[in-house]
Image (cartoon, rainbow, N blue to C red; front, side, top):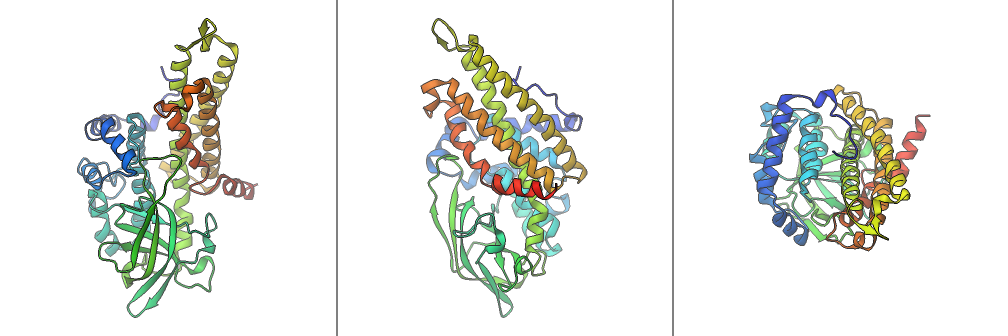
Length: 387
């Protein structure tokens, strides 16, 4: 029995969802066995071929309407893909970024022509997506970006640099946050869509050497007078980028919370199993009262967190998730994730510091969640504004 024993919410108790969960789990087992995933960790990225395999198996574009080559599903299907990915230990595959963060920008904000042009290839895995927000001199403060996309004849010239870009080495369709009117603040920001193939002036920088997330490729990107056609502005109208970003960030932050919950559950399950076997001073580590009290406290808070998270997911399905609630979920669950993993590692003793133990990898991979998607300090600011 799992440590966090919260029944599946009613909205997940669907035979079609159960069938889909089984199919996704089998796909990961067949196409992402441990040896292949280990190779991704060594290489620092997932190979493009796996994306095409995932597309052929129906794991991409779950919520994209069928008329654009998608599967016409909802957020539950995205959750299944992410849940099974975590359960099977499939590191590096940026399904959450591609399916839950980037595709909705095009579905909800793209013109009809843009949807027909890009969505089918994003669903098949022929196009791998990324979104370029962060700059070397601008992190969570998007209004301070310096990347520009200035009118040039019938198109635009894109100039600037981005960093910490997930899938930056693999992506061949990149949504770039840029200023089409540098004199304006938020009103001057547009989302520019760049197809990288044959794009002169576009350059990928080095793959960044991170302390965790080994199989996930994170990169620098450079734009030196890159020409973009006039239909590259997402939605077809300049100046809407900031508002498009703000509209999609709640779901992005909830996805981070979902990932945090998966790690919390895995850390607790792994640790309880370990302490009930590992012996010290003639008895198991579990037999010590301190062990029981610490893990009982973590279970109690993790259980409450999962109930809250399920309520947030229900709000997404109803179209009711607001900025404040999403910020609370991202902030609270990632902070809890850090605490749970740290305390669970402590129970492993010296072995917890050895990379071949799952808890060590969780420890390294977890630290970034309090930073990306908007740092937790920003989350607290957003929460405070609602008070």
